[in-house]
View 1 (cartoon, rainbow, N blue to C red):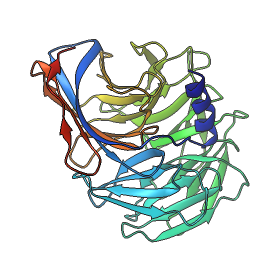
View 2: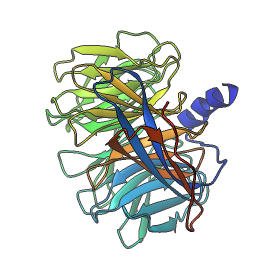
View 3: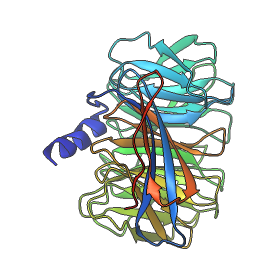
View 4: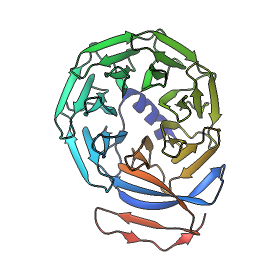
Length: 358
């Protein structure tokens, strides 16, 4: 637990540890909470260089992700073919990544105070943020054709045009610690205030509104637009452990994650109309229906560090495993009465016997 608590501090500073390497395929048995029918979730994982964090679907139909410890931007097809690109600035602390309106991938460099851009062909451009040591964290494409990002140390929201012009807006709450940001259904930008305990909204003209999260010390991290037209966010805080929902009018509802101390970290909308999220501390992938019903899938090996998550180009949920250096996908299947395990090391795999249902 000490190591995982240290991760949270590293995560908030944008410094992620790097530990293991593997390449595996595994079928998991559904665990805990609301179970409507016997199912398994098949997890297919592929190894990368070091510390995969943010992940998104690119304009080329591949998965693009940041390698925080490896200082690279990675690309992987849904068939597991990798390409990695070294970020020009050393030890940049690459964090979040998003598709820009120009068909390139844009990302934050938390430790070097840059916003980066990479084309699908691997050509980099880097832009220095106006405020020194601002701690860029989350990034998303706004409704105005620009990229919007959070400055977690400077407590500002930044805007960068596709030609590199940067504008910054100061959040009203002092030391708000904004983490992640997304475009809402109302045409504004919505973001989490990890230290300020708010969900923030900023218009494209820079006008702020803040909504207090009911749970004290919620530690809100990620935020996404749900299939129901509301915003959904994670509450990583030790005594929070919830998924929150906020309407465009600011009405907040919170749902407690079934596993205690799960550490819900990142969240995305799935093609199935549910919210999918990573449980970093519980080593699980969670699914939440808009009705508030949870399902959790336990990863079979400990300390995988499920972190970033996205709806892939194949309409399957993909996520990063920070500690094991894997990119993984989760596929729901009807349970066949046993658990199978297949492991790979960039070569033909070794299959284990069928294991009893758990």
